[in-house]
Image 1 (cartoon, rainbow, N blue to C red):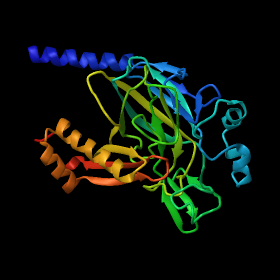
Image 2 (cartoon, rainbow, N blue to C red; image 1 turned 180 degrees about the vertical axis):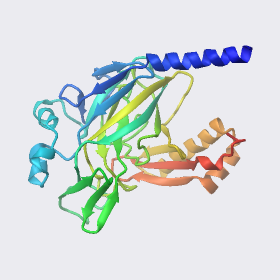
Image 3 (cartoon, one colour; image 1 turned 180 degrees about the horizontal axis):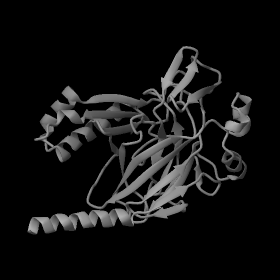
Image 4 (cartoon, helix red, strand yellow; image 1 turned 45 degrees about the vertical axis):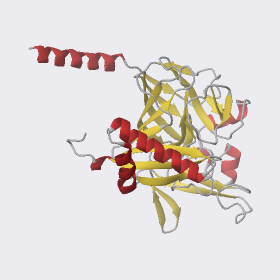
Length: 339
């Protein structure tokens, strides 16, 4: 009887919590975007509670209507809200990403952890662009000029028609998802402890991102939509496109993180960001070891050994000021008994 009563009480609690959660829609407008920055002093464009869900509409990094049309994008394929944002947003920089937000999660305080459940990612247009410019990318001296390529997207077959005989499977994700730093504006380009412009192609729908909170409300932003990307993002852009993402936010008061982590249906992921690739690798590896010690209860020696025998160290991107490395630990190595 007692066990049944406790089970009923728990079920009631879950149902009540889910019933209390709200859903919001946040369109991209001049009033709801942050152009090129994360900031702990920014005013939220939307405030929600832990457990709530928000659908966020975002722009691409393909540029203004004029630039896109000049490079062959059909006028009717360009969302109308692009024009209003390019015309009326004057607070820009220091970075170039147009991010939607910030969204405040009211329960979040510095020292907490924000869990971002990526529920759905929708591609909003039938095209993407890939662009490199003078002085950018991983091989700037070998490409001392600019190029802009429009790539048609087949959203039914979920492939990009890169060139005759070349189709790229679509795997949409947000290049930038993050929270605010403790102080004022920071450039949207380099990823760091706030997450931000991670360009991690594993963070698709069905995955979860956890980020340490540094500012009241966390102040979450998202943007830099990618239809697909290769690890490294070597020419500085992916298949850039317009995305809408549906996120559920959960605040954890009893968890503490030093760096962002993620979880996919198949892997646990730790991350490192630095100007130096070796240092970024060291950060990602150390945090994976910490995860294995804290969450899987391994000794530090066994965690190091497991990292060497089962964990893949991947280069996330090489071109955002701070380079990124992520460590991927497969879940399937943990048996039912260990879990």
